[in-house]
View 1 (cartoon, helix red, strand yellow):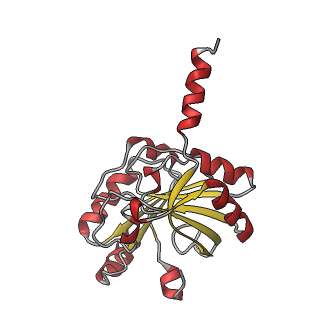
View 2: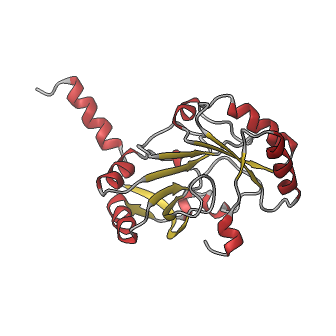
Length: 214
């Protein structure tokens, strides 16, 4: 006779995905945030319901437009790249259950990083979590305890207010960064001036765009 606990665990295990919709994978450097300049392998998952108007990866929004990839294949590709870190990004990666993928990556000896708006419940095991909350879809409460860095994209004054509001909900040890919105040149001056007056914040730039790499 199978105990209720065993049945529950089996059901939970079978619910974990063996495949995920993937927009692209690529080997480059981490262009943003605390780990900028680091050798990184990126897994860009499909699907996002946040709807940032300035998003530079809108092709990732509809998961049905992208093929499913096996977790085994993704891990093998990541390992063959021999990166310092593996970054799971999107889209909004937390739309998917990430426990199996991150467990397999870590079993392969890879360091796992997450880039997320936090708009969905947290899942997975990560060495670093870049939390980039958006006003368009507020974060799920489960994200705040997992944040390693808070990186807020700044387009206007309202984004600066949003950044301060979000900073009160993460640990005082979390790195806090403001990143100018690439298509809004005036945001660079706003961020620069703000950081000079608020030393708890740092500037994050999209260095991969300056370098002209992916």
